[in-house]
Length: 195
Image 1 (cartoon, rainbow, N blue to C red):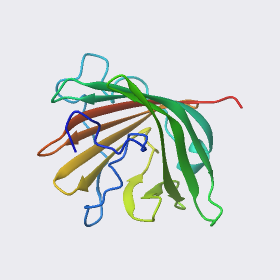
Image 2 (image 1 turned 180 degrees about the vertical axis):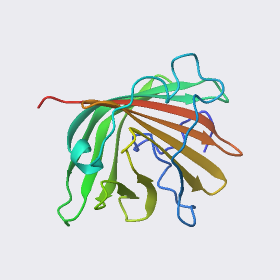
Image 3 (image 1 turned 45 degrees about the vertical axis):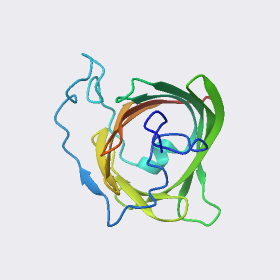
Image 4 (image 1 turned 30 degrees about the vertical axis):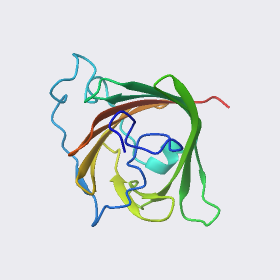
């Protein structure tokens, strides 16, 4: 895939890797991020600002959210944007929430419909396991401190995601992608919809 396009298929709303067809083994987690990444503009890193602790990830995320996402290809300087919604709703199969995103990705001046589905499996301690739609593991999520960093290997690429909860109605997600052919930064703001 050309490095001028995002690391995701056009029909995928970018954030996680493109269905990780090559990943092996469980993802790693690093709960102790220590500040902004090198190269972040002042005040724009995922660790800036007040944190909002979340004792129950599934309870917090349940419902509908508006999404605004930027996708930066750091090798080419190309930028894309995704606008849409995220719906965290009960999985008909039981025991989980489906995370369904739908919207429009604009890349190189062309808009494409985009969607993706993940599955959030709550744990008794308030954390959750996040899986791809087909059941393969993606990463863990624990927001009891208001922030979580997950690392997911995908073949030779490394995806590092930082989840930051700003308030009861807003959270941010930043994915940094590094690998032999990719160097991308994806920043997303989720705001709770009143409906």
